[in-house]
Length: 294
Image (tube, rainbow, N blue to C red):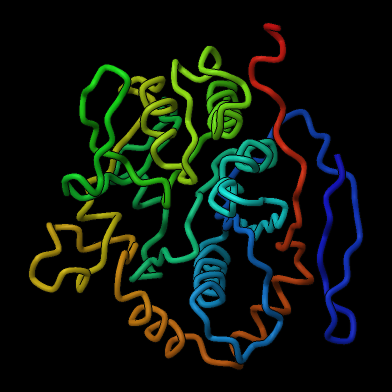
């Protein structure tokens, strides 16, 4: 497998390739990851939301001694756009790292002095845990989906997910990606034929039910979803105590970060991102999880 590594020469974007890791197992430790279909801007003056999200999470990760990757995949098209880059590449990241923390580009940690290990301990993440994520607010019909038995399911959010490198997780992630449309049929996809552009419904109907209680932790919405000003005094308790995930008012959070991370700091962070091999351009799809059975 070949990884495309991006770097800059004279201010212009250049690419080279190197062989992917061929180790016997993942590295120990935690890696924070952004996976998008958008390119990185190499201008420190760019204070856009995605840029500030990248700077913020990278700065948080390095502050606490964790790894960071920004993965870009521009190969999506039509209804299979950028949101499907996440399940496409998560299993690949888990072949490199023991714990991967997937964060959407609009997620922020309001108090960057709090160690992430403290949060994992608080939420009960242990050696049995394979997946941890936050619940969405209890809003009907917005955050509910109906399963094949006709039951309404309140969705867990896929914008913030902590995953452990484990064969079951790898299989479920690859199934999540390959079941994004009807190509492989309901027999491989839990009886479902997914056709939508969103990855969250298939996660909640296909992947989540295959995780048992000891493997899966759902963090309360008030601690790891939402934002204090999302609905004014009607935020449904989702105030993002430890993780901000603003559904609205994204510009306010963007401005907070732009004020905290000035242009000079952004220049330093960009240099470290480039020269530290944190930027990856991945296109290869994951293997079929059921190929061995066919």
